[in-house]
Length: 178
Image (cartoon, rainbow, N blue to C red):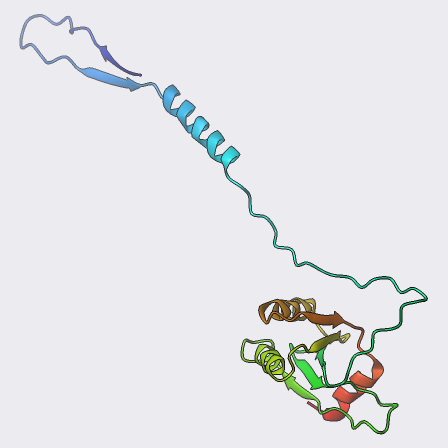
Protein backbone atom coordinates (compact mmCIF):
# COMPACT_ATOMS: atom_id res chain seq x y z
CA UNK A 1 0.00 0.00 0.00
CA UNK A 2 1.04 3.59 -0.41
CA UNK A 3 2.55 5.06 2.67
CA UNK A 4 3.32 8.69 3.34
CA UNK A 5 6.17 9.39 5.72
CA UNK A 6 6.50 12.72 7.36
CA UNK A 7 9.80 14.27 8.31
CA UNK A 8 10.11 16.13 11.50
CA UNK A 9 10.37 19.91 11.44
CA UNK A 10 13.92 21.14 11.27
CA UNK A 11 15.12 22.32 14.64
CA UNK A 12 16.24 25.65 13.37
CA UNK A 13 16.04 28.84 15.42
CA UNK A 14 13.04 30.78 14.49
CA UNK A 15 12.85 32.36 11.17
CA UNK A 16 10.56 31.41 8.44
CA UNK A 17 8.46 28.32 8.82
CA UNK A 18 8.91 26.05 5.89
CA UNK A 19 6.38 23.60 4.54
CA UNK A 20 6.93 20.03 5.61
CA UNK A 21 8.59 17.84 2.96
CA UNK A 22 6.65 14.68 2.31
CA UNK A 23 8.14 11.59 0.71
CA UNK A 24 6.10 8.73 -0.76
CA UNK A 25 6.94 5.05 -0.73
CA UNK A 26 4.86 2.66 -2.83
CA UNK A 27 4.62 -0.95 -1.75
CA UNK A 28 4.77 -3.08 -4.95
CA UNK A 29 3.84 -6.41 -3.33
CA UNK A 30 0.13 -6.43 -4.27
CA UNK A 31 0.89 -5.47 -7.88
CA UNK A 32 3.46 -8.29 -8.21
CA UNK A 33 0.95 -10.73 -6.71
CA UNK A 34 -1.66 -9.65 -9.22
CA UNK A 35 0.80 -9.97 -12.12
CA UNK A 36 1.67 -13.54 -11.13
CA UNK A 37 -2.00 -14.44 -10.70
CA UNK A 38 -2.79 -13.14 -14.20
CA UNK A 39 0.24 -14.86 -15.67
CA UNK A 40 -0.73 -18.16 -14.07
CA UNK A 41 -4.35 -17.78 -15.19
CA UNK A 42 -3.45 -17.15 -18.84
CA UNK A 43 -0.86 -19.93 -18.92
CA UNK A 44 -3.39 -22.46 -17.64
CA UNK A 45 -6.32 -21.37 -19.79
CA UNK A 46 -4.66 -20.95 -23.18
CA UNK A 47 -4.26 -23.83 -25.57
CA UNK A 48 -0.96 -24.24 -27.30
CA UNK A 49 -0.79 -24.52 -31.08
CA UNK A 50 -1.41 -28.06 -32.19
CA UNK A 51 0.63 -29.30 -35.14
CA UNK A 52 -1.27 -29.87 -38.36
CA UNK A 53 -1.00 -33.48 -39.38
CA UNK A 54 -1.90 -34.85 -42.77
CA UNK A 55 -3.78 -38.12 -42.69
CA UNK A 56 -1.91 -40.85 -44.52
CA UNK A 57 -3.71 -43.96 -45.67
CA UNK A 58 -1.43 -46.90 -46.26
CA UNK A 59 -2.37 -49.77 -48.57
CA UNK A 60 -3.35 -53.11 -47.10
CA UNK A 61 -0.75 -55.81 -47.00
CA UNK A 62 -0.74 -58.04 -50.05
CA UNK A 63 -2.09 -61.52 -49.50
CA UNK A 64 -2.30 -64.48 -51.84
CA UNK A 65 -5.98 -63.97 -52.67
CA UNK A 66 -5.66 -60.25 -53.47
CA UNK A 67 -4.60 -59.27 -56.99
CA UNK A 68 -2.46 -56.27 -57.82
CA UNK A 69 -4.53 -53.17 -58.44
CA UNK A 70 -4.34 -52.21 -62.08
CA UNK A 71 -4.68 -48.60 -63.11
CA UNK A 72 -6.38 -47.69 -66.36
CA UNK A 73 -4.23 -45.54 -68.60
CA UNK A 74 -7.21 -43.23 -69.21
CA UNK A 75 -7.41 -42.44 -65.47
CA UNK A 76 -3.70 -42.12 -64.78
CA UNK A 77 -1.70 -38.94 -64.45
CA UNK A 78 1.97 -39.12 -63.51
CA UNK A 79 3.85 -36.28 -61.83
CA UNK A 80 7.64 -36.56 -61.61
CA UNK A 81 9.36 -34.26 -59.13
CA UNK A 82 12.65 -33.09 -60.62
CA UNK A 83 15.48 -30.75 -59.80
CA UNK A 84 15.22 -26.95 -59.75
CA UNK A 85 11.64 -27.09 -58.40
CA UNK A 86 10.26 -28.51 -61.64
CA UNK A 87 7.30 -30.86 -61.91
CA UNK A 88 7.23 -33.03 -65.02
CA UNK A 89 3.91 -34.61 -65.85
CA UNK A 90 2.18 -36.72 -68.43
CA UNK A 91 -1.21 -38.31 -68.83
CA UNK A 92 -1.57 -42.07 -69.03
CA UNK A 93 1.03 -44.69 -68.22
CA UNK A 94 4.57 -45.08 -69.49
CA UNK A 95 4.74 -48.66 -70.75
CA UNK A 96 7.87 -48.96 -72.90
CA UNK A 97 7.48 -52.75 -73.19
CA UNK A 98 4.08 -52.37 -74.88
CA UNK A 99 4.84 -51.20 -78.43
CA UNK A 100 1.13 -50.70 -79.23
CA UNK A 101 0.90 -47.78 -76.79
CA UNK A 102 2.70 -44.60 -77.89
CA UNK A 103 5.11 -42.87 -75.50
CA UNK A 104 3.41 -40.23 -73.38
CA UNK A 105 4.07 -36.57 -74.06
CA UNK A 106 6.14 -35.14 -71.21
CA UNK A 107 5.40 -31.57 -70.09
CA UNK A 108 6.95 -29.40 -67.39
CA UNK A 109 5.49 -26.92 -64.90
CA UNK A 110 6.21 -25.49 -61.46
CA UNK A 111 4.57 -25.64 -58.02
CA UNK A 112 2.78 -22.28 -58.18
CA UNK A 113 -0.99 -21.86 -58.05
CA UNK A 114 -1.01 -21.37 -61.82
CA UNK A 115 1.25 -24.36 -62.37
CA UNK A 116 0.56 -27.89 -61.21
CA UNK A 117 -2.63 -26.92 -59.36
CA UNK A 118 -4.35 -25.73 -62.53
CA UNK A 119 -3.23 -28.85 -64.39
CA UNK A 120 -4.69 -31.11 -61.69
CA UNK A 121 -7.96 -29.15 -61.63
CA UNK A 122 -8.21 -29.33 -65.42
CA UNK A 123 -7.59 -33.08 -65.31
CA UNK A 124 -10.30 -33.48 -62.66
CA UNK A 125 -12.78 -31.71 -64.95
CA UNK A 126 -11.83 -33.96 -67.88
CA UNK A 127 -11.63 -37.20 -65.90
CA UNK A 128 -14.01 -37.37 -62.91
CA UNK A 129 -11.74 -39.49 -60.69
CA UNK A 130 -8.16 -39.37 -61.88
CA UNK A 131 -5.46 -41.38 -60.17
CA UNK A 132 -2.27 -39.40 -59.72
CA UNK A 133 1.07 -41.17 -59.44
CA UNK A 134 3.66 -38.99 -57.68
CA UNK A 135 7.20 -40.08 -58.47
CA UNK A 136 10.04 -38.14 -56.85
CA UNK A 137 13.41 -38.38 -58.59
CA UNK A 138 16.75 -38.42 -56.77
CA UNK A 139 17.20 -34.72 -57.62
CA UNK A 140 13.91 -33.64 -56.02
CA UNK A 141 13.88 -31.72 -52.77
CA UNK A 142 11.83 -32.64 -49.73
CA UNK A 143 10.03 -29.28 -50.04
CA UNK A 144 8.75 -30.37 -53.46
CA UNK A 145 7.25 -33.51 -51.91
CA UNK A 146 5.49 -31.44 -49.26
CA UNK A 147 4.28 -28.97 -51.91
CA UNK A 148 2.78 -31.69 -54.11
CA UNK A 149 1.04 -33.30 -51.13
CA UNK A 150 -0.36 -29.87 -50.23
CA UNK A 151 -1.64 -29.55 -53.80
CA UNK A 152 -3.39 -32.91 -53.44
CA UNK A 153 -5.23 -31.52 -50.39
CA UNK A 154 -5.97 -28.14 -51.97
CA UNK A 155 -7.42 -29.72 -55.13
CA UNK A 156 -9.28 -32.31 -53.04
CA UNK A 157 -7.65 -35.16 -54.96
CA UNK A 158 -8.97 -38.45 -53.58
CA UNK A 159 -6.69 -41.01 -55.22
CA UNK A 160 -2.95 -40.55 -55.41
CA UNK A 161 0.07 -42.68 -54.69
CA UNK A 162 3.74 -42.09 -53.96
CA UNK A 163 5.76 -44.36 -56.20
CA UNK A 164 9.48 -44.74 -56.82
CA UNK A 165 10.45 -43.21 -60.17
CA UNK A 166 11.41 -46.04 -62.55
CA UNK A 167 14.28 -45.80 -65.03
CA UNK A 168 11.81 -45.55 -67.92
CA UNK A 169 10.38 -42.29 -66.55
CA UNK A 170 13.84 -40.83 -65.93
CA UNK A 171 14.77 -41.70 -69.52
CA UNK A 172 11.58 -40.01 -70.70
CA UNK A 173 12.65 -36.79 -68.94
CA UNK A 174 16.07 -36.94 -70.62
CA UNK A 175 14.55 -37.63 -74.04
CA UNK A 176 12.11 -34.73 -73.79
CA UNK A 177 14.97 -32.30 -72.92
CA UNK A 178 12.74 -30.04 -70.84
